[in-house]
Amino acid sequence: MAINKRQIGLLVATALVVVVAAGGVAYAITNIRESDQVSTEQQVAAAVEFDLTSKNVEGRPHIGAVPEAVEALKASGFQPIEAGKLTVVGTAGSGGAPLGLLASDDNQTRIGSEADFGALIAEGLGLEYQQAVTSWSDWPLGIQSGKYDLVTSNVTVTEERKELYDFASYRKDLLGFYVRQDSEITKLESADDISGLTIVVGSATNQEKILLNWNASLEADGKAPAELQYYDDNAAGTLAVASGRADAIFGPNATGAFNAASTGDTKLVGTVDGGWPESAPIAAGTKKDNGLIEAVNIVLNKAIEGGQYQEILKRWGLEAEAVDSSQINPPGLPESTK
Image (cartoon, rainbow, N blue to C red; front, side, top):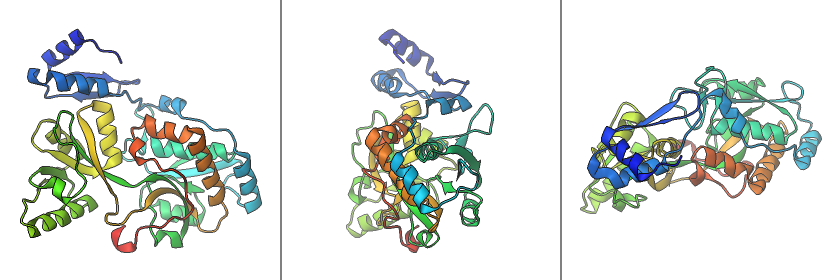
């Protein structure tokens, strides 16, 4: 999207930038002041158009059937729920971008990074991708009972889950600090970095737990703690940062990355492992010992080697969550930190 200096001036004068993606989905950059002309130019340049209609699936990266994976699947004796198809389940709630959401035009097609990974895995196995959508609370029983073959839905590996499921990792589980695009803050990664700042965080979340822990450490050292601000939803919290009422917002990196990419209002200045002080990856999961996971792992590593993996992350703004390789049943979070 090329925008010249004259157009930027007009955008500042109207104090409203609207980026319209295919299908009529729009994102607005508001609270732009004339004094913010430089940062506005950065914001407009950073904005990315996301098609959140069912046409989004046409842009999915593809991979051919991976011979090693197909052979491994055959040797394992695994039988999909429906012959010739891989039924992949995941959530698609409101506000689920960029991970999992229903297309805006049909309210049926599951799109997002997790759906892309599910479709790619199916292709690599030489099977037809069949989507399934359910609530977060229902996918575990669905996998165990044989209703679904695989789950790709931002599932963090935990030691407790590994007792019932096999996993193949494909993303880092990260929390992200995002600040206003023109903020002078360049790094927020530890307790000392947040001293004296105002930070938006969700109540009763793991990220709040981290900040409270860091504040306790700061106070013990005689330093100013961060002031925590709570909002009912992520959009309100992000607006507080964009308008200067807060210094940063701390939450799931995937959501923060999507907001930053789609509006240009904010930028990433630091990440923390989702299970801090422990760490564990996001992974595709299947029923324990059913023979599927080795073949899934082969496909994911072939996609990492071939670049399709990186393409999925890039098209949803999740490059920071890339892993070097997929691992089968990597170390998971202990039960107390999941």
